Amino acid sequence: MLADLGYVAFTADIYGRDTPQQDLADWVRAALAHEGTSDLFMTKIQAALSQVKSQEHVDTSKIAVLGYGSGGSGVVNLALLGEDVLGVVGYYSDIKLGARVSWDGRTNNATVMAKVLLHSGANDDTSIDIGVLEQEFEAAGATYEIISYGSNVFSGFTEWSARSPGSQMYSWRADYRSWESTKLFLQELFTGLPAAERGPENPMLHTALQNYTCSTTTCQGYLAYNTSHCTDSSPCPAVVIIQDWTGMDEYEKERARMLAELGYVAFAADIYGFGTPVENMADWGAAAGAHRGNPDLYMAKINAALEQLETYNYVNTSQIAVVGYCFGGTGVVNMAILGFNVSGVVGYHSGIQPGSRVVRSSSSDVPVVAKVLLHSGVDDDARTDIGLLVREFEAANAKYEIARYGKDVFHSFTEWNANFPGQAIYDHRADYRSWESTKLFLHELFIHLPDAERGPEMCSLVALRFVSRVVAVQSCLSCAAQSMVWFKM
Image (cartoon, rainbow, N blue to C red):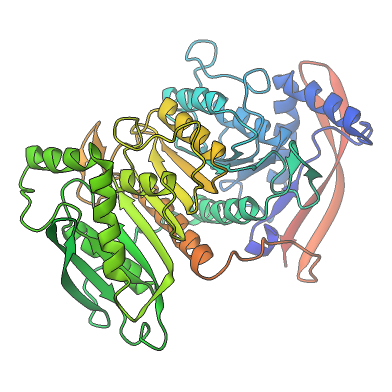
């Protein structure tokens, strides 16, 4: 699969050819022998890296390392120990202390050079272990992203034959989304981070301000769609945008045009109401607080926007998603927890701390109907608040995904003009990756979840099998390792 993307792919043999690998007992024994001896584990990985670099068709300045399960622990170790590769990707990595090395600034103060992307099952890695690793990455100055998939996403979620309920289970959705995330990550590593998208005026789009009744006042939303694509006879899926705390302004309008460019009817809702003061921070705090402190009012305003959208004949009313930024992100979390019947919700730098949002009661039997995708800055949402929300989603058996971006990813990371260092600041990388993730999510909601990719044998690929020598320095153990390298002709 990697070779078919244009890369030289090398599957490393960490255990060695003569290591027993017939059953679970063998696998556990071999894995623990390496996870418990990080020097041995790293020596084996270093041997694989050396072998790859010896291939004349490899650009040795452009190397990334992927790891699954125990291999995921290995790539976390590589990053924390300062290995000079461009990036590492871990899938259901064993990240608890004892299975991996730790970064504490004293015994291990290596500079984390590799960008890190980790894919985690909510029923595999605990929020405490993820929080500890986040703290280490932050202290080490790492550029990283950790994506958690739930519910009922366990270890082995990318392994097509994994069928052990409650422990090792394949998940079509988590496999698809994690592989697409990885492909974008590899593109970033090897060819550079693409420009983040913007949505300037486009004469092909119809745009208009729309007055509508919301609760006891008048609101003014912003509509954008392609009139040649979305018609009465061919209605389109729709996306409602819930504003940040500064009110519905040029930012939400531009995002609406971006969504309309993708083929959706986009409606930027006005939550505060026409004429609400939004001139300065005091105004924003007053207006946002009046709604956060009164969830019934807030949800009534969102409902009004949904009802307005449903009056348009060119909208497919069975296919509606809601996207929210900041204050609006709080709104979409509330919608999910309160059981709103929409296809899905997407939150960016949402205010998720208790007191800002609705907290789901442990006795609640309200189902979470909407699929949920949240994008979070590690320096914005507290780890404890993320953990609480995950527990609520798990109790409700919600379908959700939470992406955590670091380092130094603060509030408002998608807002192009945000520039308050240490508080609210734009981040190109987090903006790009979160928007690409959202586009895939909307495609899933409105069209279908594509098949997860597989990598059958192809005549355009060359496979070479060879034996290399691996010498483990600390244990004085040597072994022969048999590996495979794939590349495109």
